Amino acid sequence: GIKMTSFESMMEFSQFKTNDQGLIPVIVQHYKTQEILMLAYMNEESFYETIKTGKMTYFSRSRQKLWVKGETSGHFQYVKSLTIDCDLDTLLAKVDQIGAACHTGNPTCFFQPLVGIDYDETNPLRIFESVYDTIADRKEN
Amino acid sequence: GIKMTSFESMMEFSQFKTNDQGLIPVIVQHYKTQEILMLAYMNEESFYETIKTGKMTYFSRSRQKLWVKGETSGHFQYVKSLTIDCDLDTLLAKVDQIGAACHTGNPTCFFQPLVGIDYDETNPLRIFESVYDTIADRKEN
Image 1 (tube, rainbow over the protein chains, first blue to last red):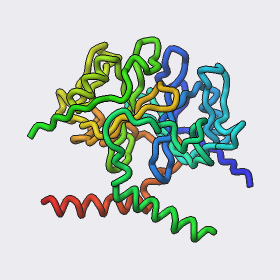
Image 2 (image 1 turned 135 degrees about the horizontal axis):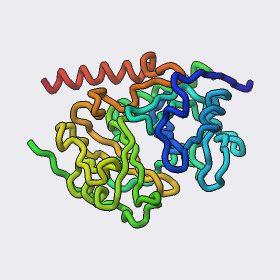
Image 3 (image 1 turned 90 degrees about the horizontal axis):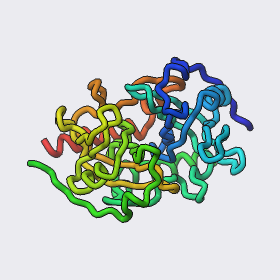
């Protein structure tokens, strides 16, 4: 079925510290795996659309218009929580991601290593996550 | 002792897509807990300083100068990995955080909820993490 959840925000968009285009960056994190999926930007309208619909809605800087994430791909992001940082200039969204977050088909936009090792591969938490997901999946299916 | 690790980047800063101030946003995530700590910005100099020293170094937009995170507080961030996103305009840094990431004393800058519940509290992964940290701590001490 279609999920639809409305939230009320504890703060208004006008209280946020936006950049000179009136935008605020949003870090998008998977609510369960804690994986970082992408960074996007919101203007006032997209913030309130996100809260009203429960679906992450951004302002596309390249197309200069409102962008409901997943509207063409079906890869919606359902809002689990929104948090703001200490100086009110960045949002953190925890989401349930349908399909791949990245337009390249990668699960996350951050798939190109620059330096260091991907600790995740050897992280016992990561292994536990993977086992947990399998168990949850088997329980459901 | 003093940790000092040099890295070589797979890409040069000049290949990144910076904003009109020549900066690129950096999402900072704890490499172990996966918690988002802060969002900060790097210019070219701070990027290469970060790689050279292994300590997260930003460009302070308020002070308009290089900022070695932790230089006054001692709350350094040691680089575990750096990743760039699909359109080369955002970095993800996984770090080992010494002390609190936030200048307010909070472990993370994202401590002000706007909407939704903090799923972390009931997340079995989070509970596992906490148990794991305790075990790791006991092994070390």
